[in-house]
Length: 125
Image (cartoon, rainbow, N blue to C red; front, side, top):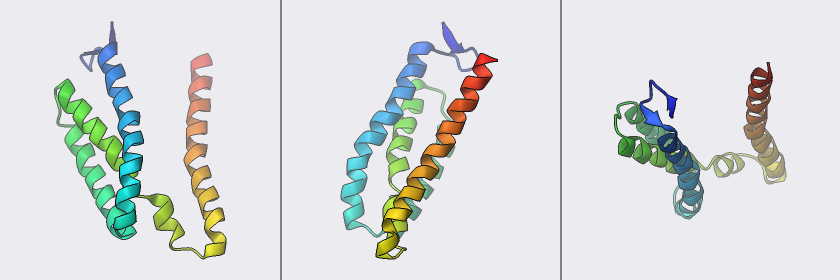
């Protein structure tokens, strides 16, 4: 069984790849917190975004499962590096921090909800 003949990967390999990202993302939350306490938010945000862009470009040059899994895991680690809440909340007044966090959290969940709803509607049709 193949996920997509163009990928030349079976469903187990696709499952392995898709499992690596959330695991790396979860572990890097801790790393990001420790590093963020010692690093300037400006450096973390700029460095994290640049590193993520480079890793995503390099991901496209891969041909092996090890390459894809390594760079997908690295992408998961780097997605956390720009500590968006810390960078944004240090720019607003103290009384507005809770509003800032609510708006940012909502902004992350609304697109996912829309994507799932559209995907389900397309699947039912």
